[in-house]
Length: 268
Length: 312
Image 1 (spheres, each protein chain N blue to C red):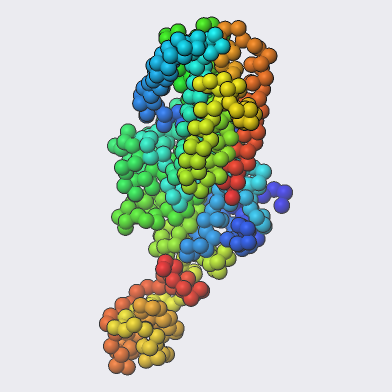
Image 2: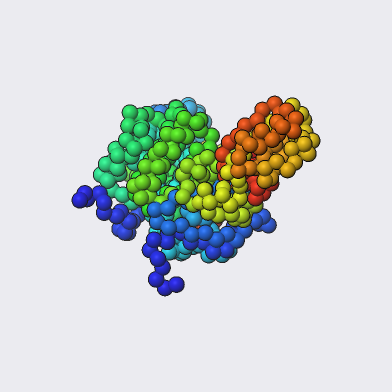
């Protein structure tokens, strides 16, 4: 009699999204070196060019932005923007690939794993990527004196929420695409304008009045504002709570859309 | 039926699948018992894969009734899938990961412990003859190796039913024979096999019982042998002529054998005795380029039932 004869079914599965997360994480372990290098390089380039290069000009000629040194003004915004870019990278091609190219999702769905597990496990992996990139960015930027307060540590969860406010709706978008041409439109006509006009490089109040509500409606501005408020040391906590709520609402609506898109795409 | 037969693993009654206005599976009935090896034979587009996806609980049933292990896929999908092994038509392996990582990850989807998955991986790599490739990435493996890995992966949870959708399509003859050998071993060890194929030799090799599907319907069912006996003759004489239209030679050999089938590239004479039929063709002064006597196969059954060949 060998013990291996016993049946394996039965035991209720604890947190069934975990093996889904594990699958993405195992793939990541093969490429993490290159990705970590990029994660360090990106904040360094922004700090040198915008913070120190452009920043010294702004500080000399205008005395910073509303009295805040430009480095300290711009870095919390770029932190939020980086999470948007990381979120985009993780929620476009990988999602399309898992549906259309390598059928990774289909392999998962042939097992007891369900559609909610597939979605949740992948999203948690994306959140982990954003959190990693954000932590590195904060650490590198801190070395350059970009922050004036320990409140900046709260920027980590806020920035993860900002990134997820992009990742989750984009999961829905990616699941609906037949080809990757939609991604170019997303990158050029949505991400780039948001990057430029969400109050990262200059306050939204400098924009022409009709453009301001557009900036306010987008998740990036909320992330930028909340981060800046925290990083500058005397946060308007009510404002931060408001921005956080907005991000959570976007994530919730995006989650509903993504779930619907996944079911339509994967259960036929 | 309050107390279903525990050995009746699959049961479909009037099972249908519709995609919008298109009916892929049109009210089919079948049942599979534990330990059986059951096949769906038919050309591309016959509804075989759609049927497999419903059985695999990844595609909802559009009509009729389906029970897997006595349970309804609509309400017990995860519980049923936990007891199934699935070999999809197209490999869904993680190509950037190693052979063993593919098995580890897949085992975790079934909630198996790390330790159990590792032990099982060792056994299965041996079974799939891939032990020496355990650490190799999947991408450079041959088609036959990838297929064996997909089968090994599907076995990680010790499934009671193994669903194989066209297991050997696209493989070279040698790789097919290796795969058939592995599937035979599984069958002998008591795993219930349910497979689709458009190769009649595969169906004859692997299936105890099969259904022939065409346009979403079942057109015949039985064992490979009984189907051949019922719908074909013992032997077939194949005649090829140096001509564009084989129909024009049909006239000259009319009446020989029990039945004549005209194909674009040859004439088939269905008969009990192929050599006698060939002699009679010769006696009538008909001179084909080649005359070949062979045993009847499921291809002939399909041709007889539908008027078309299986693989175009």
